[in-house]
Length: 514
Image 1 (spheres, rainbow, N blue to C red):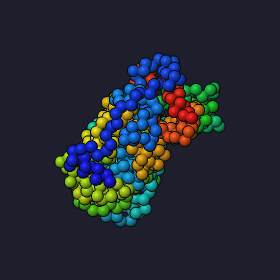
Image 2: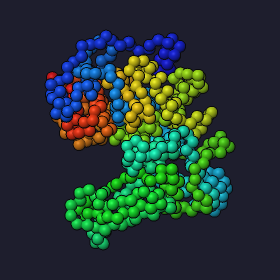
Image 3: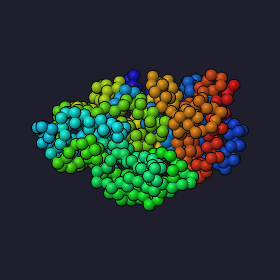
């Protein structure tokens, strides 16, 4: 069906979806929502709202329950992840999985490999510590205890420009600012588990993963009093790539705390993590862990072993439930790598091969693809999303994508366009996977702490940047009807408690429809 729609759009140059209905009379902002906007000191001109039945199409000419500036393109923050994750479900299928191939090149004698090991990153969004540990254990299961050569890490599957983690908002140590990488290990984060040791009057600090060549302070003095801001009290210094230290103390009343931080030198993170974990497992290394590329002769053959990711349907739960930016960008870049030009353009014939090979039904993005896939990049991904949108959603309300995660000042979408996509998703066979990935109001994910009369009645993606607040998804009405809801606020007061109260009031109103 998808390829048929593609041919219709490309060859006939005509719309393949229902044309937009004549604009209905806009429904007024509900009084309680309007009052909440006044309390938040947010003008109506800074807000875009749309509430409409989920199973309504343009062809039915049904008027929305609420429509206010719905055609205006605005910054959606992380709500943009909805477009990336639904496009991935629609194009790759919910069972799609990534692989991380490992190639062993050399002779193995009495537990010693005389040669190199190559680990090829192909964009796995969730190659976390536990799975890296399993990969290295499987390598040892081949009988390799010592490598008299190098462990070579290949990240060439993505072409991503080098960035400074502080560029976006001046917070380089925040894990959400991690840049995507074809070999993304543990989100490039160091996870510190801090545990009070009252008997010795100190707090023990465990670092995961162990980073080779990095001095990590394992204890800090224990203090009395309330927990308060324990991070500030520790007086951590993460500025040096080779040393993590603390000048403060830790209150015993804090109990155990887990603190993830982005590593100061992201480029050296993967080599340090692989070497540190290999050595912790008792492995020996004669050479080094370094960046490099897989030799063509090895790439032409089968890998020695492969590590497969969780299926896409599980990956998007982490992306949408917890608004994981770097995972969303990994998926976005994968679309550009696996499907370059597959929806049209000069390279359409060659690029349709991956679709024909079953990517739409859940095959993996492995290393044995012939011919080799080109490197993924943001430009290719934007092109894929644009063509997909025109075919599946329509040529109107075309969003502006940057990196597909919403962690951007350039991305734009209208409430009308996003609502139309959510309606298409509702009629899609992959609707259950998308809806299950969204936070449930008052229950889990980024909406777990929200107190609302509609607790449990709404599956909504959240979005927040400085001057931006957004919600989008599905709301169950008391009448039994289900609604698509999109709310975008772009204003200096968007990040206040009063602005969040506007969103909660709107969701409560949408759910109270009897």
